[in-house]
Amino acid sequence: MRTLGRVLAVLVAVEHIGIMILEMFFWDHPVGRQVFSMTPEISAASATLAANQGLYNGFLAAGIFWGVGSDRRDVLVFFLSCVVAAGLFGGATAKTSIIFTQAMPALAALFVVLVGSGRRAN
Image (cartoon, rainbow, N blue to C red; front, side, top):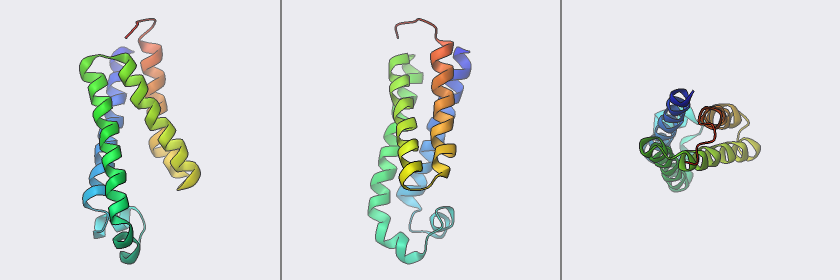
C-alpha cells in the first residue's frame, strides 16, 4: 500500500506539471485554447493570470515530489490536501469537471497514503 500511495502521488504531481506547462506556456496558443475551450481574445486577455496559476500548479507538484522523494508523509499529506482543496474550489467556482480530474485523483492518493502508512509519525 505504501508504494501504491507514492505512485498515485507521483501521478498527481505529473498531472500538475502538465497543467503548469499548459497554463504557463500554451495558454495563448492553439493547443491551450483547444484544451480550455477559449477564443483567442479570451486567452490573450487572461494569459498573465493563467501563467500565475500555472506557477502555483508547479509548486503543488514540487511539494508532492518533495514528500515522495524525502519519504515525508506529513509533507505528502499537506500537498495532496492542497490539491484536493484547490480541485474542490475550482470545481465549485470554475468548472465542475475539475473535481473529477484534479480533486478525486489527489483524494485517492491521499487516502492510500494515509491508509498505507499506518501510524508512522512521518
